[in-house]
Length: 166
Length: 277
Image (cartoon, rainbow over all chains, first blue to last red; front, side, top):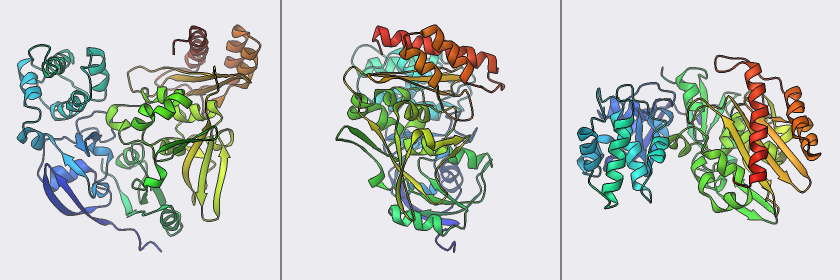
């Protein structure tokens, strides 16, 4: 009766621009797949119920909670993690701004913060501080108190819009 | 913790999904956006499910308007509801609700049908559906049926849907000329579940008020609606306090939630009059 259901699922996707084929456990979420199977440990598994944002990755051009998406659902998806986004240089200015503004201390939240912030920066317009704060409201940071993170993102937003230096 | 799934199958169309549910021996669980289900699986609140992944069924996604009815596919994602021009024009309270639902990354994956079928009493969309007088469209082994929102939500996480059925769409009447729709809620932090929330719709036929996070399901406040139709705001607030029985928990006491409900009603009415939604 239940032969239609698989406990291992074949998926074919791209991760950081590279084709990946794998057979994943039915209940494995994307972060465990990326970390344990592919060795991409940038995105972190933390709360694992969608609250903290440390697992934020980019899937098909959108920020996604890696802990709330099953690897089995990623067939055909285009996935980017902080490693790949670093290699392409797509957000070097944002990463530099995080360093310059002390927008990280322990760094645990930073990969998720960067992916979430980059999504906002890639949308049209120059976001206000309130909009930045709102967009990052699902990403917890226990070190910085957030102000430095908002500073960094705001600086990059203005720099990319040609309104000032990051 | 780590999820424990009994198995996974990717549905190719609605009929296939229904067949998979039928073949699951009662263990079948529909996986759409997964933003509540995968969290519950990770916390082992749900284990051993045979997952029927319907998230690829493009025929269940998208918004259309026809003959005075707005038709929203069940797999339409929150982010799409929030930006869709038809939704903004014809059911603006749904678009307004999106900003209150969790965070951007979750709104990118979560679906309106998933939120309605999940029937979290603290969620925005079920109360919006109730306030709008929405209809839920379900498909099962024996065909399709339509369930009014008033009959759809039964208890905490419980709807009128049968285990063998799939919620395929929601339809709402398009806003009439001069119709007003507002949503008010109080949450401790942006994206948190509301301590209390309220949807108010004003039509020529009268007001409709639905509340969330004040009981085991979204509540249509008929007493407050009647009082508001009579222009009696104080009476509406009093009626509202009498017709809800909110829970006490670590977030808020029942008395505080009941107080908030009245405050939210006054705020919503003020916004109607100020027309500054």
